[in-house]
Length: 132
Image (cartoon, rainbow, N blue to C red; front, side, top):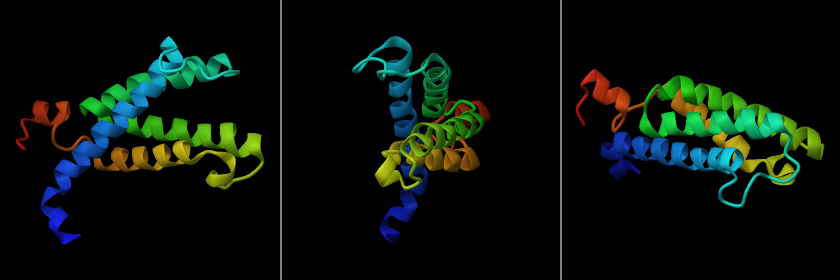
């Protein structure tokens, strides 16, 4: 898709912003009971531990403020969520079988963001004086 290559920075920024936004919604669900409420049977460490990481990490990634460290922590959280909440509970490592597609996808998207950083359209870029 060579015609998209000139837009790679902007597409990455949209990926970062939307991933952070959607992750923030998960945090709002767990911490404040919004959007259908707290998942039934979720232990407090999931609700408050993961929920806080989802809320704060999602906002930081979305804004592009310390996005790399926030994404790294979020990636690790999703890796733990995948194995504890999906692999061990379902007894199967395949995401399609254990319903862990979202956790696995978040894990790797956040890992990419952790490596790439905030990019354009971010608070970090504005603080550096980077134009876009």
